[in-house]
Amino acid sequence: METAIQMGTAFVGTLGFGLLFHLRTRHMISAAVCGVFTWGVFLLTAHWVEGIFFPSLIASAFATLLAETMARIRKAPATLYLILGVVPLIPGSSLYYAMSYAVQKDWEKFREYGYQTMAYALGIALGMFLVWALYGMLGKALALTQEQTM
Amino acid sequence: MQEKILHELLNIGEAMLTNGSEVNRVEDTLSRMGKACGASQMNVFVITSSIVVTMTFSDGRAVTQTRRILKPGGTDFRKLEDFNALSRRFCKEPMPAEELKAEIEKIQNAPGERGKFYLGSMLAAGGFAVFFGGNLADGVMAAVFAVLICLLQERLMPFCANRMVFNLLCAVVAGLGIGLTARLNPYVHMDKIMIGDIMLLIPGIAMTNAVRDVLVGDTISGIMRLVETILWAGALACGFMAAIWLIGG
Image (cartoon, rainbow over all chains, first blue to last red; front, side, top):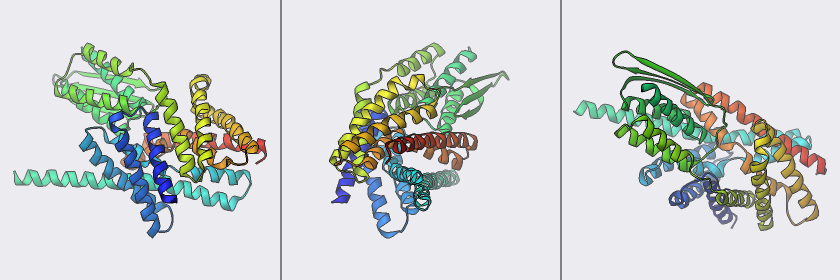
């Protein structure tokens, strides 16, 4: 039930950001679905792997692949699908708890949530980067083999 | 003549940057467009606060212009898509500077949609309040305070020196409002409502972009943006913390 609520609200939230960022109506639903899928991959990975860093890395790598694919299908810059795809991974909650424990001077908990916030941010960025690096290598390798066969 | 076209290229670059494009994408687009209109070599250097372009032509002439970017960037996917399409069209068949200028202005002056801005903020704040574990009432309250944040963004933002000051003030005002509401109505949770509204103000996307810029190799841009976003997030945290402290939660 909790998972269903999260999936539904991830859709609504991503849709909201789509509107906020002036996304064209024709991309709206598919971008929101990208956000839902990314969160699904995060939950699936988190089911098997401990911690936050690795699941957010996998989820963001997935979002990047999905965004590149959607950009080709829908003929739009990949950025719009990518940014909206990773919106559910943004660590708003852990940032809030980190600072609320700082107010209460509970430094143990503050460290825990501060670390979580950073783990999300690093995971998202590294996930994107890994896919791009592989993508770039693959593209160059393909270009090279095409040159050689010519 | 070449100066005129370069001026328009800088206009496109600035517009893309202030509407949320990545630094390396702007560099790439400007290089392609310059080559399409006859430059034999394009040297483009873009960071979040400045653009430097030198176009070299085959007859040996070189034109250089720079642009200082002062306006902080927002995100507008519609304009980004349009500029992307315009640059592709230009690369296929270059147009004269006047025509390019008219096209850029047409995209830049597209009317903003106020309704969508409010609706989007409400959906995003409400959705994420519930997403992070709030109940339906929390979602509704987060949406109500999203309207307040939108109003502040429209009315208060122009008076603020920068985004840091705005985030601080906005967080204090919204935090006090949310805290008092949660005091009067024990059915809603202060933390969940605040989290929903934090999602609107947190520079999560900018921060991710910053780390990515560093990893991709645009180190200066990345570090500049990273420091900026950490300050924004810090101001946001201080604002909400001050509100929580004032209310005594």
